[in-house]
Image (cartoon, rainbow, N blue to C red):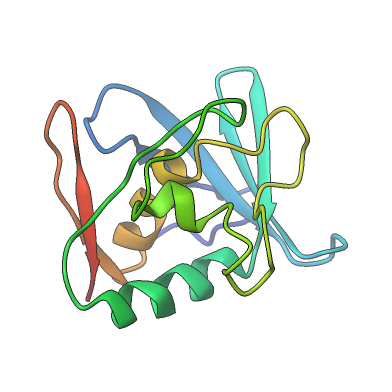
Length: 133
């Protein structure tokens, strides 16, 4: 398994399998950051999102829809995307760090949790879901 570093990133695919991207940890950033590179676009999320999302999924105890949406679009209630920007999550809002690129939490974080063995995902063309392992 890749180390999840800049030199050895995780190679991931979106849940439908339509796009490939990389992710890696930058624990020395402030705050510690998870870098997501999708083509020429760089997104960044708080690194703690991995553990926080896993803990939240364990509390849900069932399949949860991903609900990926861009930052400027509303996220459907009860989805991973909505939780990733909710004032009720452990960081009190967005896990995404780069304004204008804070969305798509429900698209890019779930495959990482699956790679790390923390979650199961469906891989349909649309309306994918996840649950904790």
